Image (cartoon, rainbow, N blue to C red; front, side, top):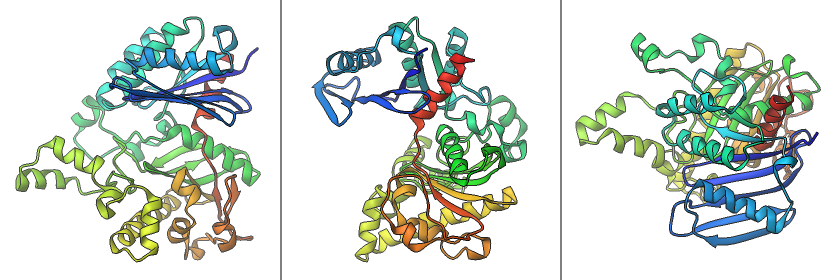
Length: 397
């Protein structure tokens, strides 16, 4: 039986895809279609070391997927319905309904549509991706993998907000968490590095990129996470504020006359590193900090301090800790951030090795000192492989 899975990630104006073996994770091709629905779009299809790019108008998601399939025809590798075990879809929000990947059928589509109010920017595009793929691959199993699913194991005390019962029961107000597919992959890979079964590990995992979150993971299951009802809560991010006093909304409305949409836009798109330093790219913040830029220095310090606080909080939540695991662009590549967030925690058993931490590497590795009670691991994530792996498990069950 074929193990090939086509993984699709439909965004608001883009479609990303990768064709890979769901067991080994070896990718045959990948690509993206950008600026869907605009006057001019871009298709990039990569096979091995070769990138093939073309500019053309892409009308909608069906046009985007057909364009991608045309690139497979022109540049390889060839794919057809008989050569695919499944099509795996990233779906951002599954509410409290989905803790596992699910085969796509009409009932599933209706449920994802019902959840649109919880993710109005993402679920509509994900839903369109599901429908288009069903039309173009009618005989291939379609599997939805939810970004929130991993966190459905959180205990009630962790996911419950102290708000009126009607909010919680009628309007689904609770902590959901995100980056779940990444956490599933990274937690399992970290256990392998530790030489343990994932069921025997306690981990604090830090997914640090333009979007950033933290999770406490016991035995491969989420027990708490920093993102909440939305991906705005928690750590400082590229353009998102992370934790703020919720009364700020009311204050800005009363004092400045701002609408809720204006306040949301500021907290989502104009805050975080961008609001603190004028740059949302952590690499640029680090460069400016190195030459003495005060705003960049403050942005770096706030970012690192927030990470440090969550490490301590989740250490306490777990009660025992085997490893702190960093992933995402910042977590993997910024030795400065790792040192600032985790340095000086020797009394908690967290001891970095400066040479290992500063060494340039791209593979999964330990950057903690020999003998450290708590390992510090850097683990590149691979969400597409995780989606493919989960999709393959569903169709082979």
